[in-house]
Amino acid sequence: MQIKIILHLIVFSTLITINNIRDVMAIEEPKFEVVRNFDAFELRKYPPLLIAEVTVSGDRGEASSAGFRKIADFIFGNNTGVGKQSKIDMTVPVVVEPIKIEMTAPVTIQASSNEKSWKVQFVMPSQFTLESLPKPNNEEVKIVVVPEKYYAVIKFSGFTGDESVAENTTYLKAWMARERLTAIGLPRLARYNPPWTLPFWRRNEIQIEVTP
Image (cartoon, rainbow, N blue to C red; front, side, top):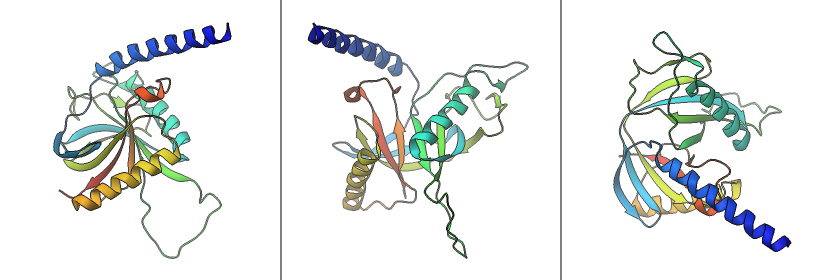
């Protein structure tokens, strides 16, 4: 009996996930050009993009959740459009990027040194320009025009815990070394699916900005 219930739950979860994937496939993603690729690795050229971002502190999981909520609040209506609030279509992926701290003197050690700062970013739908995009009511949400950039990317499925992220980052850096690509940014995590998506259906990426 218990086995039958478990099998039914697995089938039900799979159906939900498949429907979810269909929905995600209809969601806009930023366009890019694949300059070079091998297996799970790609060198991509992204055009200028309009993004919404927030800066949050904590570990990556906490930062991702907190940042997602703030940007979701903006796109779901907490904004000022042309005389009214406007709902903005969701896009993927959600990007979590560590903030590089510049070296200063003197160096001080604080009690919160184990915490990091992160940028959580959504690319805005391509129908908008900086002028036409509704303005966030929350001052923490910033609208930024990102210039053309190149990213080295590794694609993987499954969970995005610290171990998996570190492992795939190592693989990506090794590929970059073989391809003689020079990093000019820190590794960032891009996720394409809601958290209830089954692990083997998930689309994840580690992206590192590189010189052209």
